[in-house]
Length: 438
Ligand code: TRP
Image (cartoon, rainbow, N blue to C red):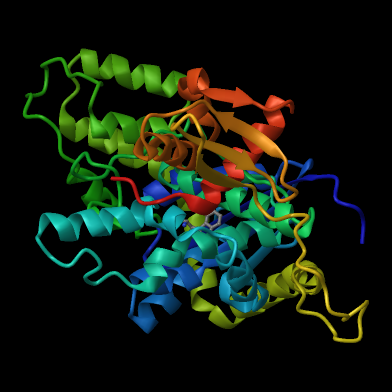
C-alpha cells in the first residue's frame, strides 16, 4: 500500500428516490468532474443505511440504489478510477458508528438541524417533542461521521444543509484523537459556490419532499412535458421578462455556458415567449443528457452487472476499512487479552478532558476555574456575587467554546498557555458538553 498523499474526496447520496436534475447539478455532475482530477482520490458511495432513516419501503430503497448508481456511472464516473460502493456493503461502518457514538455528546446531537426540525414541528403541533422521531434520525450525524472518518477524507463536497454534519464529524474526530491518539483526519466541507441550488417546478428548491422535481433520465418526451410545467409569471410574448427569480432562467444557467446564458438573458429582455424559452431550456438540457440516456438504460437493465461493480468497489473500500478498524479497536482497548500488558491499571488520566470547578473564597465571592486532568489551571475567573452568575459564564464557555472568550475576557484570568491550546480544549469541551439550546 502506498502512503497517503493525494487529497481524499468523499461523498454519498442517500438512496431514497429517483435522481432528478437537482441531484445531477448539485451532486452527480460536480463529483464526476472532481473524480477526473488526478491529484485527488475519490470515494463515492450509495448511502443506503441513511436511506433506512427516511424510508421503510424495501423495494424503493433497492430501486433507488440501482438508479443512483446507474446515474453516477452514466454521467461519467469511472468505477475503476475511484472507490465506488454501497455503504451497507461495509460492515466496518456501523462498527465505527458505535465507537464514535461513545465520544459524541448527546447534547451535540440534540442540536442537529434535522432532529431539531422534527422536534420543533412536534412542539408547534403541541405533540410530544419526540413523537415519531426514531433514534435513527437522532443518530444520523454519527453514521455520517463514520462514513467520512473511516476513509480519512480530507474534503467532503456537500450541499449547504450538510455543513453542520461535517463540523460534527470534525468534533468526533478531534474528541477521539484527543482520547486515543491521532487516528482520524479532520474533514472539511466543500461547498460548490458556483452551483446554485436548483429550483424545482414551483420555484422552491428542487427536492423530492416538495414533489417538484424533474427526473434526470426521464424519456425526452416526458422531460419536455415537465419543463413545460415550470411556473412562470403571466407576461405575454413580446413583453420583456425578468431573469431574477425566474426558475426557468436559473435551471437554464445551470446547464448553459456564459455565452448561452447571456443570450438567454437578452431573449428575456426582448420579450421571448415562455413557450419558446421552455423549448430552449429543453433543448439545452437534452443536449447534455441525451448522450447518457442509452448508457443509463443499459445499466438499469443489467442489475447483476451493477451488483458486480459495487461488490468490487466494496472490496476495494474494505482493504482500507478492515485494517483501520483493527487499529481503532485496539486503540480503545477492544484487543486481545494477551496483547501488551493486561495488568491492572491506575485510572488513565493523561487524556481525560479538563473540567470546570466552582468554589467560594473567603471573601464570600463565587469563582470558577478550568482545570486539566493533571490539576493544572487553564483558566481562572474573577469573583462573582452569586453562584448563578458564575454558572452562567461556565455555561457559555461550554456551549459556545472559544467563541465565548472575547465576551468573557473582562472576568477571566488566563493561565500561561497558548491561545491555540486553550481554544482547542474549549472546542473539545463544547463537543462533549453541549446542551440543547433553543
Ligand atoms: N447525508 C447526506 C445527504 O443526505 C448523504 C451522506 C451520507 C453523505 N453520508 C455521507 C454525504 C458522507 C457526504 C459524506 O445529502
